[in-house]
Every structure is written in C-alpha cells, then in structure tokens.
Image 1 (tube, rainbow, N blue to C red):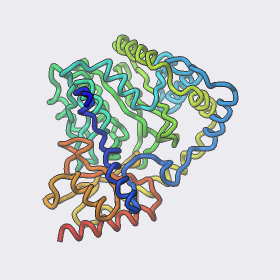
Image 2 (tube, rainbow, N blue to C red):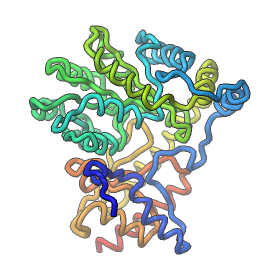
Image 3 (cartoon, rainbow, N blue to C red):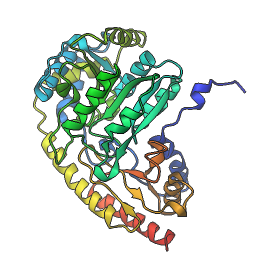
Length: 399
C-alpha cells in the first residue's frame, strides 16, 4: 500500500460523508428523502434564466480561454457595484478575488494565515470546511459558544476567553450555516472590536446575505468602518447556482493592515491559474439586470421555514430554534440516551425510515453535539413526508 499524508487522514466533511450509506441503500432499491445538502437545484428551484442565457452568450462569444488569475475585471467591477448597493461600501476591483466557490477562498486564506499549531476561532457549531481546512493546514479550530436559547447568538464573552497567543483569526458566518441564525448589528460590532483590540484577522462568511426573513441585515464590512475584514461570498445560494462553482473574497482594509495577506491570496490565485472563465463573463453581464426572481425565492423559503420550524417543534423529543436566514434548521435531540451519538441517531433514522439529515457533531463536536441539521429547501409536501417519518421514528425509539 502507498502511504498517504497525515493531513489527508484528517479530512472529513459530514454533509457529504453521510451520503455514502444512503447510496448503499439506494442500490438496494430504497428511496431516500435527502434533506442533508444546501442545494436549491436539487429540489424545485432552478438557476434564473438571465444567468443561463448569459452563459450561452459568453461561450459563443469566445470567452473560453484562460482569464486573469484574480478574476475577470468586468465581474470584479460588478461585485464592487453590488457591494456598494447592498452594503454601502466602496471597493476597488483590486480588493476582490474570484474563486472556485467559497471553498477555494477558505483554502487560500487558511494556507496564507495558519502555521502549525495556530488557532482559528470559529462559531460552534460551524460550517465543516472551516474545521477541516484548518486541520488540513495543521492548525487548531477552536469553537466559541453560540447561545441556542438566544437564536444561536454568538457569546462574545466566550470569544474573548478563548483568545490565546496562538490565535490568528475569528470567524463569523452570518447568516449562519448550520443554525440559520442572523446576528444583530450590536453583536457583530462587539466581535469587530475584539478582533481589532487583539490584532486578529476577522473573517466574515456572507454567502446567504440576501436570504433573510425576519430581521434587518448588514454585511460586516459596512459595520466595521476602519477595521479590517476578510469577506467571503459567492453565487451558489442567493443566485441558485451551486454547481457553477464561482465565489469571491474581498479584503476590506481601509488602514492597509492586510497587505501581505492580500498578496498571499493573489499568489495562490496565480498558481491555480484561474476560476471558470465563461461563467465569470456570464455573471458580469447577467448582474447588470435586476434580480427579479429574488423576492419570490425568499418568500417561498420563508413559507417553508415556517412549516419546518413549526413541524419540528411538534415532534416529541425535539426542539428547534427559529431560523432567521439561510435555509437550514438545527434541531436539538432532547434525549440522546437512546443512541450513543447524534451520528448514530442520523444513521439509525436513515436505515429505518430512509430520511437523511446531517449529524450535529459534524458541525462541531462540542456545540453541535446532540443536534442534527436539516434543510427546508424541499417543497412542503416532501418535508411533511420526511418529518412524519421522523415523528414515527421518535415515537418508536423513545417509548
């Protein structure tokens, strides 16, 4: 056997890892209800027509070669315009890097920032890539508490307590995956102040920024003013095109404290050559048009959120904080004594009822433990069937 590296042995990604046993059941003829992955296109949503038409035009206009490693200038200009209109901030195209989804942007940042043993403060629970890629770079992901009883609001005192001499950065995901939390402006400002006072890099994942239901939303850079922020965003969720794999990161750095970090990201962008060129040209053109689909999209998701949240709380043995954005809920399993772990719960449900969620500990072993994540992207009829099966399962197991 050829030996593999220790860093690859550590790689896990709960959201897709749980699909492997589901696929085995499908080969046995079982029909699985998948509520594990945040892909609107898997259900009854579709990529808006303006983007499809723009991609067809881009390919036929011969935009099929390599492009600028930092990203097509027209797209970076369009993103700067978007951020000005949505967040009221003035970006230069030079501040923006186009990536192959946000996942590549996370990899760029952590490769530039984390030396062996360095610590990255992440919300508990958090999106698994932040944990996995920190470990991949031989760093230490350190989860800080978010308060379930307060809608998964970050505990700023816990953030302060967990800062050490090895801490390099603080992450916020807002709106949040996996909990659906939307952070209030006061909390975001407090985290900005903590990062600034300790000279830490503040990272803000905002890929769900226009999928918000009940509360005002502002991007972190618009609140930060003179404080530096690295922002991640992309086109998968709001623009309903996860398979197109286009994301971006921008460096908000009024006092030029992140110049070396910006250069490090630029060098990594060059070594991987470029992101998908035709799609970049297509998006640059399509973003000139209004997002007419967005209001109906968010309204539909809100109705499905309302159904999922109500139905989950009707099931004995479960409780669920109300999601305020994105398209996830993160219910708590009130009595886990019937299973060794929340992963056992998820796999038991899959095997007996053919419903697939993601175990909460896959988003953090401390603050995600005893929970599971579901999407509320499917039509209500599909969710109703899945949650009915879940209720049957809970009744059978907890009698």
